[in-house]
Length: 363
Ligand code: PMP
Image (tube, rainbow, N blue to C red; front, side, top):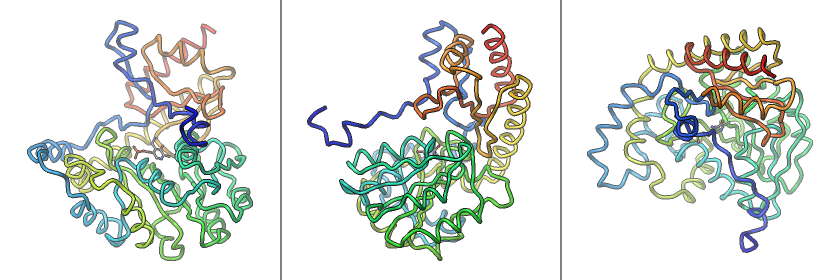
């Protein structure tokens, strides 16, 4: 490790949710559910699945590196120019491209306490300095984040809604923040859960693009579109920023089935609507079930909810595993009393709540 760059030596690897197959093997049972990675409980759209299958005939060819067809579809759907888009192998790829293109050793990247784990990771991978700003009630304290910007700050990462807390900030707060950010600082507005949010004052980052050329919005096909396994995400930015990111990305970073499935998914409004309403119902079910267990939860507008176990969450997490239920412990986020559960189908949510009730009463 001493040979790795300074930032990498301090980097803690991303910890994904425990794989279902691993727990199946450990417990010797097949009946395991996973509500740990904010995946879509309805699965992918059938149209996307058909498109991906169809595209398999083409996999002896390189993909269209520029993603012409998907970009054209996205541009039309989002009301932006195709030259404002960069496609990524998941939106994580876009976040990493931003760090690679804009952060040098000694530069600072600002993000919130309890924000998505990839921000410090991509920052440290470039040997830049992560500046973590204390949060307010698990959400972003945007005023404090603006105060934290120095002349060495090159990038600010915002997540709206945030993962793992499910918190959000409104249009007034975002506009007040953007007005305070110097033009030479890139603001990354991570909207991975954008499509789920129903709040009337929830800001659409794309509508602010014309006013703030230093703003980049990232979104993904992993959540509402149910294509997490194919890895497709995108960034929308000023054409000059998009151009920079397109220069540094791998030439074929999104594969053929992924390009085809993403384009088909965009058109499947039924699947999008169903996914959204399933999530709304699931969030209510989880909120009511957690309240019935007298557990404090962080109100969420995304597709998951974090709750306080009333003590160390690790034994609760492990006991849930023994019940065949995988959720996400948040100790790595500095939230050792919290677990995060993804809104699943009604049946999976019920199974999770029953298992949690059992585990807690045995405590
Ligand atoms: N941003 C946030 C806030 C997320 O929660 C996630 C997924 N966990 C991502 C980005 C990355 O998702 P993907 O790479 O699958 O697009």
